Length: 341
Image 1 (cartoon, rainbow, N blue to C red):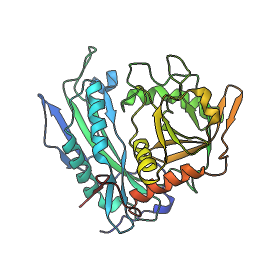
Image 2: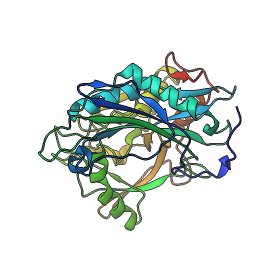
Image 3: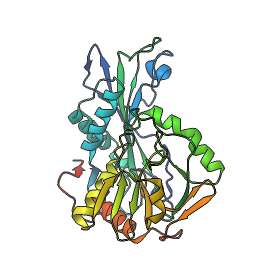
Image 4: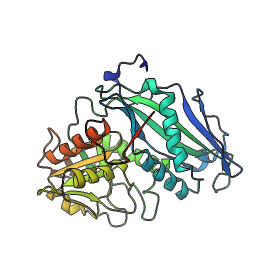
């Protein structure tokens, strides 16, 4: 394949239009076969359900060039499953999970020249999404929907390596008990925008959200799950019905237990415990793991022993192992890698 003339090593994490995207429409109770199109514009009614009542869900995943030159995706079946759960929660028709994976493969193949080369630090980011497309003026689900996947080459989330960040305990709530915090809906991210802008203005990189009911338990940030390491090397992640089930977090916990032989625990994490952890990270698709060096809590600072200079040793081992699997340097557990042929 002939790669596009792109300065791969200097790509940022932003949108670059590629040649093809996948589009399928739901009408009269059924999805059509879907097509690949060069048209990047979405044309909908001014009264479309998505514009009136935010009826939209999305996913995010990447395609990589591995060390031996293959193009692969990482666990797209889990994205398909989570996407189905999100759609069901917002009373949207489920896009079949097998067709979701097929559409991901088709989209990558149609834009194969935009997959960055191995060693560049860049990847091809894919954004599957669905929205209510027909006019809806009363408060009710739409009757017609559009499912789309576009892709864009992106650079590494952290230029020059992942340096530990400083976050704050947010005064805002991310999700209500029994609400939609466990699905990947646009409305959840809209709710977090004011909080993250506020945090940035105050000099912080991200927010730590506590549970809305008691404000005593750690939940997540606006777009990533927490991962903690105890002083004796145990990997701990918060458990809650109102946080997003991160594919990266689930994969890291499997890596920790089954590959690195570490003790792992998914449980309620009380904020009062956080000061006793040795390491802290935020895990998600974009950065894999963002190390946290300091948490600011209304005048009090929690500084982790791992410090502000580099990832802690356990976090670094987790990061290196998972990225090694994704890039083909290490053997992957069965079913984790989908080769694009």
